[in-house]
Length: 153
Image (tube, rainbow, N blue to C red; front, side, top):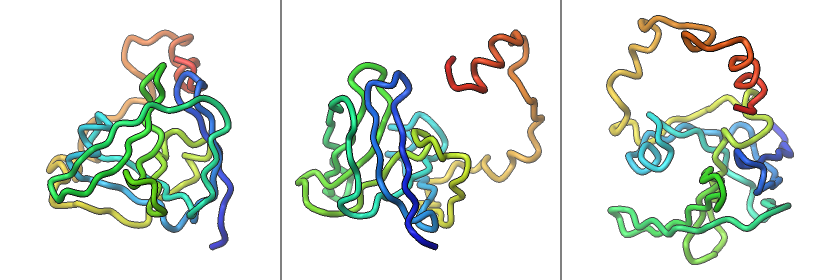
């Protein structure tokens, strides 16, 4: 599949960016770092094609995370709203720049093709189909629901 141009932003819109990705490289990461830093059961990552990431507005806050392996990665966040934007090699060298897929305007079109760190996956993920599903949050007003669907809540 050919490269795809994507664009994205943090929750408040302070940081905006664009890049090129290979849609077939989109992945799910179950590592405990992604769980903790993302505040969720896993994180969907869209690796940017080397040299294609361009920050269009704002300047991210950088936190360098040192993994158990000693590997150091820059974690880029919005200084205003805290949205995680990407991770990249701490030394600035070329390497895997992993965009946080939920920040991409094209997110709904990006289907993961691989899962990694499955040994850290939460055991209840396989049971999600058995948990009752609702189209909206119970007790939410129509205005709340509309705002969340537009991404403005």
